[in-house]
Length: 483
Image (cartoon, rainbow, N blue to C red; front, top):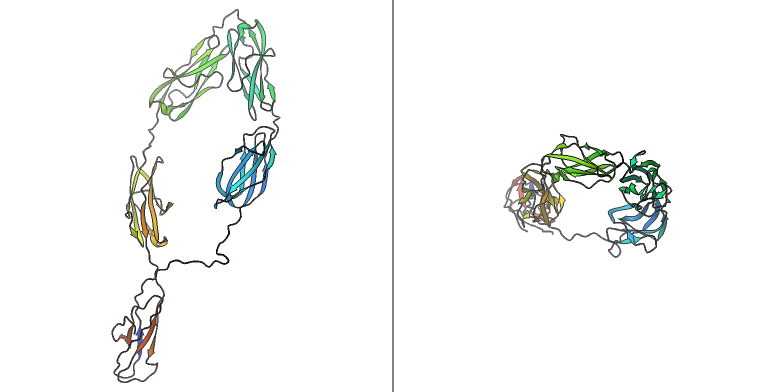
């Protein structure tokens, strides 16, 4: 906007040196609708999402690694199966990356798999690779297996608990016990590997026990043979021995605690049952190691008694020495804090620097309050009352914005306050000064009598005033309009 101002004044004496001092009260100019210049049709096309460099590597008997590259950051996922129809998919990794790597696991041994990789970018454009194949490795590693009960050289009578341990690099498919080279009992497909053998059906004398472990690939291992003697003419009247090995007597416990015991027998241990305050706790343990995981938070604070009862196949039993422990669990704090914004008020119009405050309380204590602007943290984490920060709204766009506060306590419980909606309205400051020049009288002119003194003034927003000066002092009235 340009405004021209012309003004005249009477000058009555001598040669005058005229100075014009322009005083401008600048009004604000609001700008909106700013737009960049875009060539062509005004639309910048997004980069096309493409998948390249799909590679399979690091094969094992049960899986392999897949890697690929995308032209723009995108998510990661794999479809796979034993045919090109796939049938299975990995969970999608939402990380937006250009270099992708995922693992396929728990696959069948020595099996050909079809797979394809897929990615989706931030604009929801998707790309899928072509079908490819890869095979898992053959499993040539046999399992390991050992009989743990009865002991070598034991004399057996009545019912006898026969147990074994077995492990494999992939998984144990089955364990089969054998007596004198012939299968005895059912094939066991899961731990514990235990079988109750009725020795009264066997001839008195020497016998040999073995166990055969087989994995999913058909690899098999036979355990070392255990020589035993069956003698049912003399009944087994010898009870097992049993003792608790953990926790120690007098211990103070909290959380989850491992409870374990050692048990032995002249023939074999049939079972171990743990007890808490005289009542069974945990499952009946049929094979070593004899242990269970005790969640002490489900027991009252105070003194408690633990023991273990071991039995053999003949029905003989022994109860261990009692171990006395103290349970001491603090009551967890599950109560979240309360928090509310106290300033600014909801629906307020704000500008410049604004004090944002909140009240927060907790049954134990407030650990921190974090203010948020439009869902993003703003200001520093406030760890003590008063909970407040100074918000410079000039760094935020004009318009509607949302404020809230998140309060946390030391236990990690948190609460988010009700959102307060405010409107930011900051004007854009005008820093461009006006222009002004005297148009009459001419420089170096000789004047007398009444003289017309005039000036032109212009501004990008508007000229607020023009003040003429004579020898540095104001002369005439403040001129607020043209001419």
